[in-house]
Length: 218
Image (cartoon, rainbow, N blue to C red; front, side, top):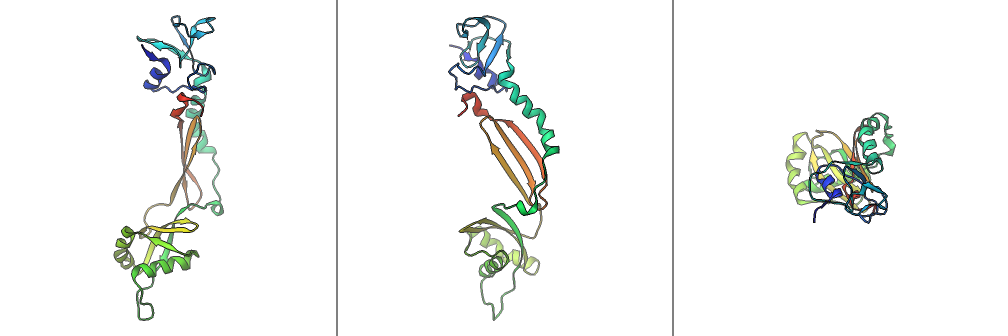
């Protein structure tokens, strides 16, 4: 037994579609070889044209994949910079990320406000963002004493803004960027876009072949 041409191509870094899942019926993995096939040639009419998902090889071989299987990959690779130039900016009122950063001013404890650091922080977040219950994990609670006293109670809170599941994730002093990633996971391609969540600008686009395509469309 040898190695399937489709698998050999994948090991060499060339992903070729096999939309039928290796049944040899869709023709998307057709390859042209310099020698006759082993019986899986296309209807025995084209001895040098074989299905990559069916042809076994046992030695080094030079093959040429047809455009049907690799054309989309070529469009993806050459289109990356085009996408980066042409993608429109998002309007700021269209940005509704589940994870957000907000600037808070947490008042110091007093006789009138005799609450813990955690209670005062959650109170400030509720007043600022109009949320109800807010969960705080142990790691965030450990950050509280120092974070609230670095700049007189001014703190940047990163929180998970999902209805009925608001949670504080991190505290800081406003350093860094506010970025988000959108992922389009398709049958044959995967596209990632990096956004500035303040301005709505697209900072970068990356795309690649979905490696599952060699196993079938589904």
